[in-house]
Image 1 (cartoon, helix red, strand yellow):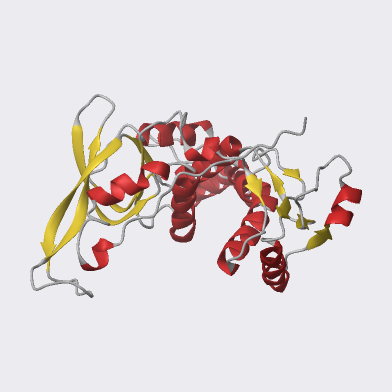
Image 2 (spheres, rainbow, N blue to C red):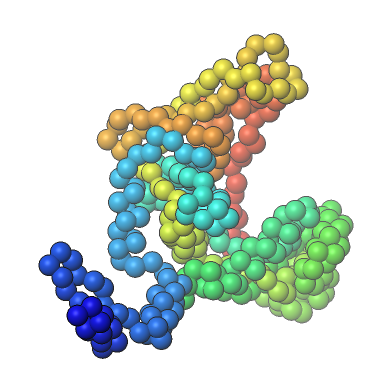
Length: 328
């Protein structure tokens, strides 16, 4: 009797039939080869991006205001979203909790969208050159990282830096630094510049530097969308709201230059004004201010630049200009 039941069970498993009992239903037997193919197919699907259910789940997270975060990032533009992405990329979904606070989800006045979207390596500081080289490689491999839909409309084109007689030496000095770091560019004299660009008025130009590789421009909105999507997909949470203040607590754990005997007041909570006007607070371990032109004002709320000692140094945010020459 027992052997007959065992034989029937094995027959059902091999024939890939369902086995029913009065209390439960066992899962159908899956051929090992088919199971391997299914897993591979699911892996490829994950590489292509999240499913609609994943996207809806991420959107639902935006409606829940967190009371605590390991890292709070104020500003969800290119800088803030990039920081969120790399923090989550290095720690995975189950790693540190990252919350990005953005006051305008349309990004209508965001510094990122108002930028020219240029990529070049003509800088005087080696750190800036290295950052730009890394950025060029990041953009080159963007689709491998985020999928085939990650199109930022990149247009490769060399940037041309011009200098008069007074600034010619700086062009030469910068070019030496850039070439030492692997940048490929070309120094042009006034005559060479006139031959290469005959339509250009070079009367006041003494020297020029033309980028030959890893230069160009792209759509800033497209890049922001890609990086923000990547950050959210890895578990970063975006909250719509405006940071209006910080809360402090006395801490005796900090010792620094210029500090007196009074307890150090450490900032550990952020006050967020929600779209409906309600104020909510969120505790954090670390805070990153990446709010563009509002960064200086937010830093002052955190007593950066208004205190004493190490807090006496303000955040140097200055208005920048993009000049567009007329070729008429």
